[in-house]
Length: 352
Image (cartoon, rainbow, N blue to C red):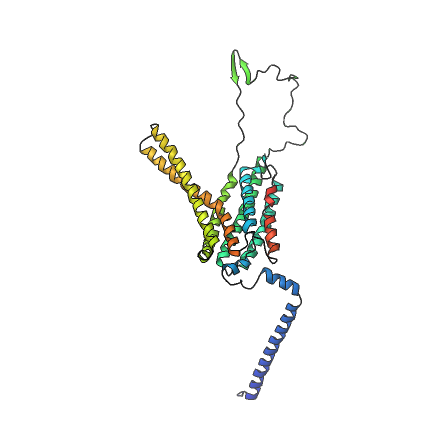
C-alpha cells in the first residue's frame, strides 16, 4: 500500500512551523526586553563597569577604560608599595621599622585580604580594556605587583611563625631553678669571663646577632617579569604619542637618561676599585677577568634595579600625560574601583 503525501498538508505544516518559530522569537524578544527593562540601575552600573567595547579615539580615548591609579596618585601608591616591599622583605614593620615582624596569623590575614581585593579589581580593569592590548599588558603588570606584595606578606608571616619558639607544656617552666644556686650568681663572676682554670681565664663567646631572612625578596623576580610585560604595552602607547606629545617625549628622555647614568656610574665605581687594586700590585689575568666581571656585572644589576624602580613611576607619569590628567584623579565611573584598589594595596603596611 503506497502512501501519498498531500502537497497542501505539507505546505500547511511548513507555514505552521514558520509561524510558530516567528512567534517564539517574538516572545523571546519580548521577554528579554522586559527582563532587561526591569533592573535599569543595575544594568547601567554593569554597563559602566564592563562596557561592551572600548572608547575609540586613540590613547586619549582608550585610557578611559583604565580604572587603576596613575599620575601623581599612582606615584604615591607605588612609592608606598616600594616602602612596604623593602621592609617586609627585610623582616621589619613597615609603619615602625625599628621593630621586627612577629605576628604570623594577623599578617597572613592582611596579605590574604589585600590579594583577594586587588586581584578582582585588576581583572575587571583588564576586562574593560580587552580591546586595547596595551592596557591589558599594563593591567597585568599592576595585577602582578599586587600578587607580589601579597605573596611577600604571606611568605614573611610563614617565616615569623617558624621563628617562634615551641611552647612549653602547661604548668612546666622552661627552666627549673636549682636550690643550690647562690642568691646572687654574679657576685663571684668576673666581667667578660667565665669560670677559671687555675690562672687561665676563658673569655666568653660573644652572642651573635640574629640574621635577617630576606627570602621573601625573591618574589621581586616575578615583579621584574611583570614590569617587562607592562613596559611592552606602555612602549606601544608611547610610540603612538611620541611625536605629537611633548610631555611624553620629555618623560621618555628623562627615564632613559636616569637609568643609563645610574648604571654607568655603578660600573665606573667598581672599575675604579679594581684599577686602584691593580696599582697596589694586584695584576695578571685573574685581576683583569675579575675587573671585567665586576664592572659589567654591576652595570647589569644596576640597570635592572634602576629599570625596575623607575619603570612604574615613569608609567604613571606617561599615563597622566596621555590622559591630560597629571593628578590621576579618577572619573565618576572609575572612582569605586580606583580608590578600593588604592586602599587595598596599603593593607600590608599594617603588618607587625
